[in-house]
Length: 458
Image (cartoon, rainbow, N blue to C red; front, side, top):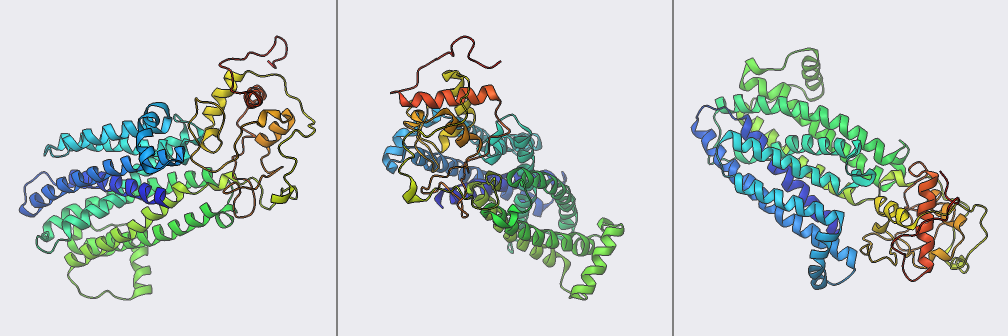
């Protein structure tokens, strides 16, 4: 719960900073009293968001360090330097913190060129979020990370821009003129439309990669939260369409959206809601933007939860298997059981590298000092080398064949939360990984252990 709250704060502060920077670049270059006040307010808002992001990044580092070490808060603070220097997650957060400091120092500059540069830095910060999320399960330099990054930037420009626009245009003590609204709001509306298109495409890809099957929308926690998020986004899209196709044209008829789609939307809205009341266009536009910003906060809440929930793709079967091991039937799991497959001897050092690449230490404690304690629930692998190699292969390639009960080891249907590696490992890599696991029956895995000549598979 705390991890989701911290991640939500990271997402919200980052998106608000990106949205504020984007909105500032949409302002016309010509001077106007109300827009000059808004520019100054936007700079303060962006700086505030960056400060919050810096604090939230430190909080995320502390929360993750405590989860890794399982120690008290004070002991976790002492372990932070080790996490920063010795883990992939720590190095990504260190880079994020440095980038936030750079953006914060430059955010006070009034030059549009400086503001554009700060926006680029903020987009780079968004990459750090993708690199510490589910998209990075396939590696850092992958299509999944690139698409998740594009999704984050587009969503931030849209929803973060809504929040910034509501803050600077909705203040009663300094209302915007009709002329200023007629210039800025249509520009932002067009940007929001492009962002929505990017969000839809990249979000569809993310949903496909994280779920794998449409059925998992209703059968997994991840899928149900995603459905809730999509419903909220649909409300946000409707409000934005009303603003773009109905209210903005009243500010400036020349900026009215034309085409078949715009006419169909206006007719549909008239048929469903009837003729609109005669409130001033300025107040209605600002009111809708404010409501959109509030709905956007709910989207961020769902996104934060999705970042902490196990993706639906980890579910490899749609029902509980008959070989499920009950808590009282585990008397024989500590010793070897007959196996039908004996792999060729592998290499321990290569197996260690594969273990690290797959981030297995995220869930499994191992008697190897090169890995930090796990941050998620999973069986301790100490002594697992005493088992038959065939059993180790089965546990890697078919985790639901024999399921070990434990806190957080299974999902709500009793299936293992262990990822499916059946299409991610070659035979040689599997042999190396099994050899590394077999080394755990010794005191500690050796630095390098080569297979005897002729025993490795080419």
